[in-house]
Structure formats: C-alpha cells, structure tokens
Length: 147
Image 1 (cartoon, rainbow, N blue to C red):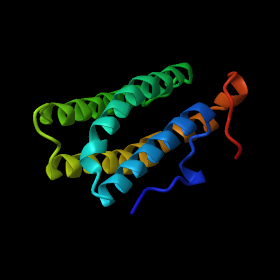
Image 2: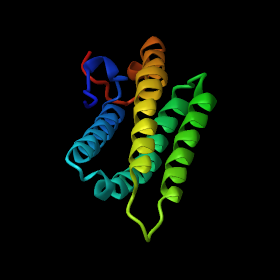
Image 3: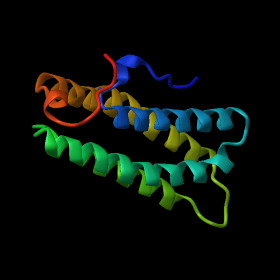
C-alpha cells in the first residue's frame, strides 16, 4: 500500500505541488523499506527529510497565504506547528543507543498518513480553491499548475 499522487491533490502552485509530491515520494520509499524489512534503517533518514521539508515547505506555503490574504492563515499555520511538533516528538522517542522499534515505524506511518489525508487533501485543497476564487494567479507573479 502506498499513497499515489493525483491531479486533484494539486493546489495550483507549481512549487507547492512539487513539494507535496516529494513528500509523497519519500513516504512511499519509507513504506517500501518497511515492507522489505528495512524500515528501521530508513526511519532516521525520513525524519531528517521531514525536518528540512517542514522548514522550507511551510515557509513557502505561509508566505503565499499571507500574500493572498488567506482568511484561514492562522489556523493553517497552527496545523504546520502541530506537524512540526509531532515530528520532533517522534525524533525524541528514538534513542541513539537502540535501533528504532516497530512502534516508532507505526507511529511515523500514522502521523504521515494522517497528515496526508487531513492536511494535504483537506486544508491545502481548501487553500488552493481560495487562490483560484480570488484570482491570485492573475494578480501575482506565481506560476499556476495546468488545470
């Protein structure tokens, strides 16, 4: 089982859509590693990726939200902070002396799947509709994905 990128998940901003796709690819690589019995060795790499992804992606998304006067900006920002905290908590559960255990793999899978379902296909889709409805792409220099 994996997550598959679908055109309807695009919010319309090329840079953000590519970032979302890279998250999906990383999650799928992690799921494949878990299926092949290598999830523990890949977990630390995934968490490192998520740290970097969160900083860059959330900054990009929030900057566009501010520029577009997105009315749900504060709520969306709080969701980003919540995700960042969950990743931090997952990292803190790991000890340097022991390899990740199955509960760490399950917790990480759960956090990412929940994020994908609730945030990307929910909150971010709502944000994308706002951009279209307010003619953000016509008024800004941002590149829109093909409809």
